[in-house]
Length: 161
Image (tube, rainbow, N blue to C red; front, side):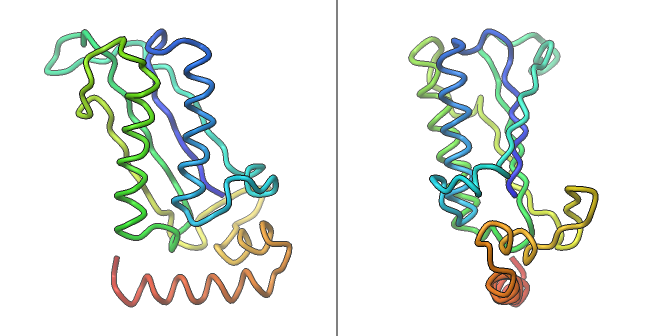
């Protein structure tokens, strides 16, 4: 159940480029969460919220090139150092490529915040959903979801990542 808040200034990208980018970002998020981006059930619960900042200021002044902010939220246990680094790099590359040379290539204009929500704090469908619940939904196998979640969370908590 990944969630992405995408802050893209109006007019920064063409409508076609933006739509393609948002689809690509969904794939990036799912892949780096450890899910199959081609699975329809997985894609069904991968949401992207597009936010349009009215203005972006840097150092108190309006920017001359767009600035982008992405907040990726996943259930606890889905990111590790490698996955976090990969999502930051891939999102940055995808955004700069989507600009198609309209602005100077500058990765400092793209900020990505990969966040994990503590297990048992993801609310959807009027209830709390744990990692086991989410994986069980995606796989259609509650027991497999429980086993995966126990393994992933224990590994994660053991290393204190």
